[in-house]
Length: 458
Ligand code: SAH
Ligand code: SF4
Ligand code: F3S
Image 1 (tube, rainbow, N blue to C red):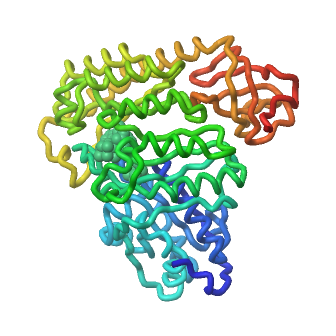
Image 2 (image 1 turned 90 degrees about the vertical axis):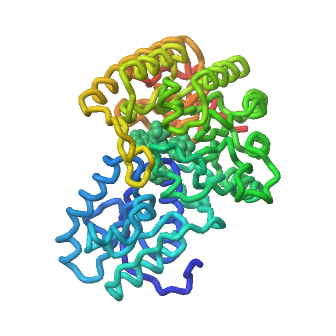
Image 3 (image 1 turned 90 degrees about the horizontal axis):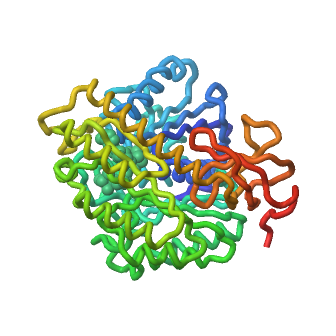
């Protein structure tokens, strides 16, 4: 429970976040808890008394970054009594107390379902010098946003489910986040309403596998399916945009496609990871769909939703992936022509079935495949941007553009970054921008309405 009765502390906390949107949301949640428990947050590591890393285990590289950060803190920890170092997030649940073997100067290891205990754990670690490991799962716990403490005032993530039951053979998430549990719909809608009342215009509903919302065994008492939930959230007064991720292609229902097409607040955008274009490899990945099924779903989406922005995740170099399998992935790219592709080299994860598979792909072959894939993906992304030239995009303003003086930036409904000239705009304004050029995957343009108009106030 929250520990408001605790005395004020002078301690300053530096919190660095790695990994996916779940971690971004949960870091905001932890930051809110710390402030309510009288800690101060600092953006400067050198000022801090407490350093927390919210970590990711998805690929080796993500973990290496954290191990290297921890290594750099050995002297820092020794230099002053009462300093605290903590690891939160997925490395906490994947390594638990083994983390203390790798980094004995670590004071606390706290998994995603135990964040309410973070303030108390810091106090105890600082006073007693004893290391603590709190990594159990708790299906009833969901992090909520504190509307006063959002990293961005106009946009928020809402966690609608957690864990994953899909067990793709390459993936560590079912182990770091536990079994799939859906959050009760009333609680989600209530959070969306609270956020909207505090000025939030856009929400992203988050889960590893949102399309199976309400269907997992841990969700017996839930009455809504994902499309119904999306419709409910889409009705919340004040919310102009609703997004969601991630969709698993197997569970993408016709009802969801129809809801996306019908509900005005739901944006024309979907992230639909395919992972690979070869049925043989998909099977070894345990993705549970075929390329034909995936293409049929994309066809249905495109036929129903005008101007749909489709993005995907792809892994190259999965064990046993041949040149022929990889060519099928390139063929799939050619067929779908994604708006954006997030591509990864396969990274073996301890404890996952794929890590025990024979026939690893040599590093050079992975590199070459990644390069070929990215070249094609960028060509398609550029073509998609070309197709927006001369069109008017509705942009939700994120703030002044750092690199372009006298300009602002925001996101289109499709979720492309748009930079536009102008002055005096505020975060959360809605502006109609005519697109004049593009650079890499960003669009550039000029507002259609005269300056200061079209701010979208209702
Ligand atoms: N739940 C989401 C994905 C979460 S992880 C989904 O199913 O789509 C985000 C992406 O990381 C995955 O889509 C996958 O492309 C990539 N990924 C996961 N495990 C990986 C691994 N072991 N090596 C390389 N990429 C991986
Ligand atoms: Fe991982 Fe697969 Fe679950 Fe996504 S659906 S989180 S890739 S196991
Ligand atoms: Fe990483 Fe955990 Fe997210 S492994 S991708 S932080 S769910």
